[in-house]
Amino acid sequence: MSSAGEARPLPRVAVLGAGTMGRGMTHSLLRNGFTVDVWDRTPERAAQLAADGATAHEDAPDAVREAGVVITMVADADAVNQVAFDFGMLEAMRPQAVWAQMGTIGVTATEELAAQVSKERPDVYFVDAPVSGTRAPAENGQLLILASGPEQAKPVVEPVFAALGRETKWLGEAGAGSKLKLVMNSWLVFLVEGAAEIMALADSLGVDHQQVLDFLSAGNLSNPAAAAKFAKMDSGDDSPDFALQWALKDIRLAMDASGRRLPMLEVVRDRWAALVSQGLGDRDVSGARHGLG
Image: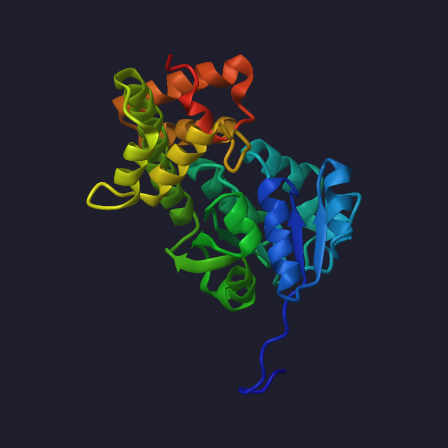
């Protein structure tokens, strides 16, 4: 047992899902001295992280057996359920380990997961911890983590979150983090669509993009997120920091959770769904500039 003056040893961490976000998060953990196990259903992704210092595994249960903290960062609720239950991740976790579910899968799915973990593995702590941030913040340990779950999980998972994020907000019972994340992502959707339509309007009127960007970057109309996406649109850079298809998924999750009509969000959903159907889903949300003439 550690004395009052000793630092708690770093927990071993398993990261399941080695896409854009999982890869960046793994790099942040390795940079901060954590021992990291990784798994992805595409083995090449895990192998790339093994070259960076992680230990790659062929199946999810092997990846989590020795971990004190297990992070899932996969595409959606179906993928989380498949990994946790069909592939045997939850069953293989150590007693008193923390499962930090950090992808955005919606409120209902998160609450159902928390209930199922409580039923099947009451000795595992489930933490709902979606993140605000994209590729660069994940790589640089600058995510905002919206955590909710049992108090007992905090001392175990806090050093992990400190390596991954610039700030962690603890919000209450599991599900609260997912609720705030959907609100925040819906705000981002409006900013991106607004930037795209303002660019289209500027082009129609012959207004120079830099003049618009000056207003987005300073003064009472400034907004760093809108300015960044406007600049990305201006450069024609569609490389994905946050892919259009995943933003569309989050719009749908927000609308499902709301239970009320959100007319502007409905319009953006339909327009972005059309872009995804045209094959633009793997582009960054800045690809929303397409389809506006």
